[in-house]
Length: 147
Image (tube, rainbow, N blue to C red; front, side, top):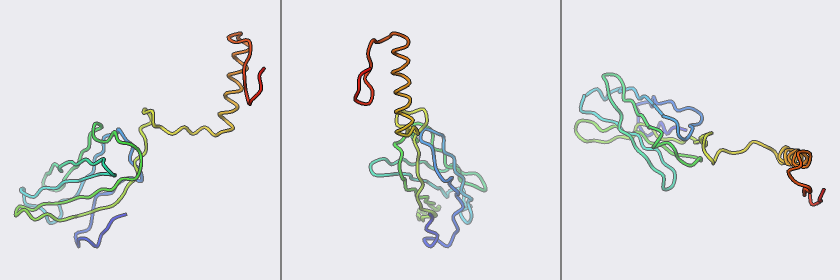
């Protein structure tokens, strides 16, 4: 969701549908009317008390915003972002603002298990049967009953 009415200059940063925590995030903004080498841009991403910012590295045509994994290794959830450009005179203007969900890093402990209750029950039953068959235990408890 972008609030295009904030500025007649159209936003040109396209974010993916979701971002993955712990990844390197790179976004590019076309300089548009901000062609003076002294013009600078920054991007802020945040949710609640988690906020991080980066300045856009500029060339003749674009500002590039890079967030490294040390910044993006954040809890999953909905995040807001804003992109600002400050011209050579020090006037700051909001170019784009919106929201994007951040999903958990698959390598983290917060990764959501996709196993259903029934799948988990079947797996636990199989583990209990294997424990009995391999004689690791002499009795198991499953579903409120002992075997």
